[in-house]
Amino acid sequence: KPDLSPDHSALLSLRSAVRGRTLLWNSSLPSPCSWTGVQCEQNRVTVLRLPGFALTGEIPLGVFSNLTQLRTLSLRLNALTGNLPQDLANYLVRLNLAENNFTGEISPGFNNFTRLGTLFLEDNSLSGSLPDLKLQKLKQFNVSNNLLNGSITGIFKGFGPSSFGGTSLCGKPLPDCKASRGAIVVPSIPNGGVEGKRKKLSGGAIAGIVIGSIVGLLLIVLILMFLRRKKSSSKSRSIDIASIKQEMEIQGDKPIVDAENGGGYGSGYSVAAAAAAAMVGSGKGGDLNSAGAKKLVFFGKAPRVFDLEDLLRASAEVLGKGSFGTAYKAVLEMGTVVAVKRLRDVTISEREFREKIETVGAMDHENLVPLRAYYYSRDEKLLVYDYMSMGSLSALLHGNKGGGRTPLDWKIRSGIALATARGIEYLHSQGPSVSHGNIKSSNILLTQSYNARVSDFGLAHLVGPTSTPNRVAGYRAPEPRPFERGGRGPSAMGSVYCSRGMDFRGVDAELLRYQNVEEEMVQLLQLGVDCAAQYPDNRPSMSDVTRRIEELCRVGLLEDHAPQPEPSTDADDNSSR
Ligand SMILES: Nc1ncnc2c1ncn2[C@@H]1O[C@H](COP(=O)(O)OP(=O)(O)OP(=O)(O)O)[C@@H](O)[C@H]1O
Image (cartoon, rainbow, N blue to C red; front, side, top):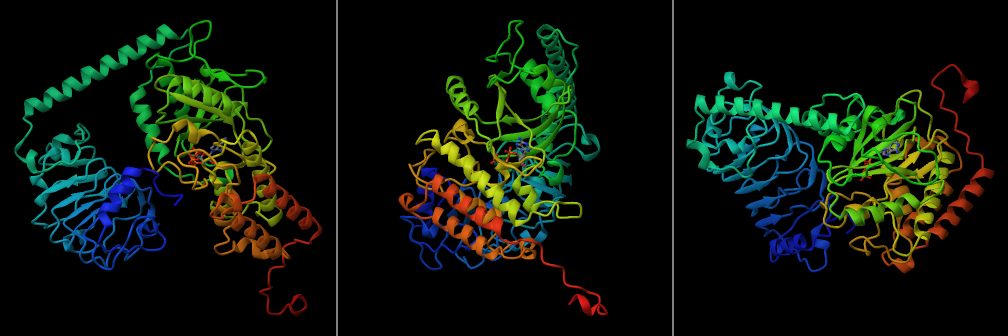
């Protein structure tokens, strides 16, 4: 299944988990029962482990509640959202929901899990204080790296400090609430247990930690300032890289809310911080210009109107955090606006990175977002793109629908479909092994005149198959794993335009205002279905796809797609009925 982890070892562990046991799964989550080699029987699952299976969204109500025999449930390392599930089978002994995106409070409803011995909730975004839980059998507990605050009370006092690291909780086993206010965040140690409960930090130890931290921090700041002075002749700024980076990460977690303006919030520091980190950082492996300063590597023949120093000075805002890193809008001093993507988890070698990025930079088509430049050092990899002022198709479809927004009529939508198909067709024309690898509506960006351009092409190849399974949430054909594409058509149109872009699951109400578009919509839907054929040979090639959408748009131009008049609400106005 395209959305599931290609990680074979994970599949094997699932197989052993479900063999001979029942698996009941809501249809909105991918059913492991449908995987080759997995057999599900009725009502006998006792262990269900799905770590790192790229599960997203909220856990549907009741999905586990019939599994009365379930004792161990692990959904660790997925991208699950919403509140913690409350309707899990009450006989659970081990529950591991760590490393997801759960939000909200830990409800006292956990008291229903009377047999619970292990509860791992670390590395989520849980907030509020700890509930009053009376779970007598709880032996392992970890809520570290959450947004929790307040004091540690009741049974939780018996666990070691590592169970609460990276939170704002206070009181035993952490420092006293008064003393600790804002001062110390205990480092997190995974899977904390009861073993730490007898350890208590003395006043002297706490003072030692505080003084040591301050001296260490001062030393780091001094070294950073020294390095910056040495490496840059320009006016130096004292930047606490660590704190800015941390701030960047927090900003990056937020979704885009203002689609009309290309999204984004905050301002002023993000790209500057990334570039600063790159410049004053390790100093290893960056491209050096003749003066010895790090430089951007540009593509194409366009004049080099800015350099890394300019990026450093740019005011910037976070556009969003994607699977390959965080994207920023940067407004340079000379007025140029660019989008900067700060890649994370690049695991391939420098030589391989440069080879691959050169191929990406050489791609040149009016329906691709041009990659203008890149920066490479051991610690930082930055990609600089043209900024697309109308934001993404995703934001346009699902973002702000309020007043002042240009309605996304059928003509614009089919034009976007056509432009996107042309962009992908160009990518496929570059060779049998070239594919996008992550087609989705947030990767289709729009110019001021709603001309669509495909972005993020080639990035799936940069991060390599060893990256986290959550990474690719867009579409690529299921058969060419890990990243190669077979010779024929991807079902990109099927995914982007039928499932996501045009929302044919229930036709976008906005389109119902336009006349005579049903036939074209059905034709485009049919094209999407053809693209999603199971066997690659049965799918149309991208040039066929482009041709069919061209035909559709040509016919569409002859039709009258004017919006239907709104029904009158004025009871006296009979003439308008
Ligand atoms: N060149 C650009 N111009 C304008 N907005 C952009 C540009 N590049 C990215 N964005 C926007 O920034 C946000 C984050 O983009 P990014 O590509 O990092 O993540 P994504 O598309 O949400 O996910 P993925 O990384 O899986 O493709 C998205 O909303 C995207 O539309």
